[in-house]
Length: 308
Image (cartoon, rainbow, N blue to C red; front, top):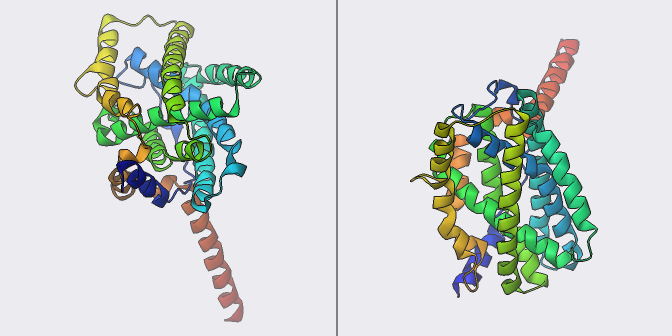
């Protein structure tokens, strides 16, 4: 069995179930929430602003192909992918509202991207193949960033617990569904060379947008970063534990012949989150189950009391 087929088989075994999490973002009080570094903080806010409209487009691009998928396991994974991305979008909308309250207007950027995506969809060149290939590329970028975060949790240590837990949960589910859009694309289009071309385009466009959004957030906040903050941001990206420095090789793996997302077998990171980092008090499904159990228990007590 080849490496690609082994990876595909592994991906097919992944159980993708949405978790309905909710985090107390009201605990975040500091505008520049990462070590009081304005540049790193607006980098995080800019990323968050792109998630709700971006993930809505990911879902829409996969849905365009759903009726052409014949594999039952992949159909089930598509449902899980849609559910997970939908919950991510909702929580990042809440986070963006909290950021706006702090003076970083991520909501304004979120709406800006939403308008841009709607304009993009109306273009003749925005074919289903192009849209899905862009989703596959962005899913690769988010998956390798997720792997970095979970392998290096100390990078997020300066943040409030609610923000860290949001990002850990998001990272875990990005790993769980990282192959879904890829497998949908390959099952129908089977053109991996095109995926490699589009990833280059996606990387450039995304980098430019995040840079512009960072400048906008700093401008609106009337903040001129200090040289110390700029150096801190450089270390955050390119230092020994820097994000970009540590995702360069997994990013390049995408360009290998026969690449599959599960060539990066990191299921252990999901298992680690479940055993060490998962906070059930922020899981709405558990809260609802407990509330339902409490009602049943109370009803039983009422019945026993009436019969006594």
